[in-house]
Amino acid sequence: MASDTQKVLYGLYNDEEDLKKAVKAANADHLDIMDVYTPFPVHGLDPVLGLKESRLHILGFIYGAIGASFGFGVMSYVFTRDWPIVFGGKPYWSVPAFIPITFEMTVLFAAWGMTLTFYTICGLWPGVKAKTLDNRITDNKFCIAFDVTETEDRDSEKIRSFFGKTGAAEVNVKTI
Image (cartoon, rainbow, N blue to C red):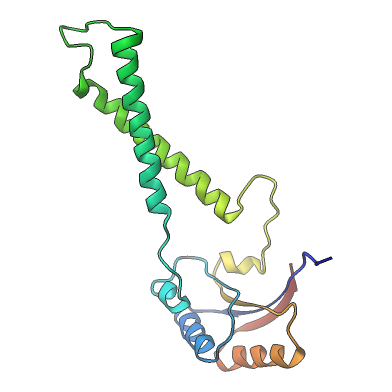
């Protein structure tokens, strides 16, 4: 039976430029970075970590297209089949009159769809306990974390020396 706990060795940095240099050094030393935490987005960190562009915008377009189709379809059905009333001499199927509702449904479906997708991918649901390494990471510290759950002591010491030579202000171990 596998354990749900994870042993994490992490180093805190005081500056984002030091963090980027440390990530580059970790890549050069072939160290397997578990994650990098920052209090704000750091420009240029994604390519250094080898992260690809998010595909959330593609889903946003799909959700928006579904919303536009739904809004336009409902308006068409209501004003041509369900309740056909002539308003001010306009025809039953007046496409320009449907544009505001169609636009609003596009925005509504895209926003809700992307929000729910993001929450699902990140596991951000009510009642989920956050696994926080250090509270200062959300305030003013930058962090590189390594999973050392199944790592030998020799490799853990290699990571500790890595933090020493890259200027980490603090090195800690935490079980999450």
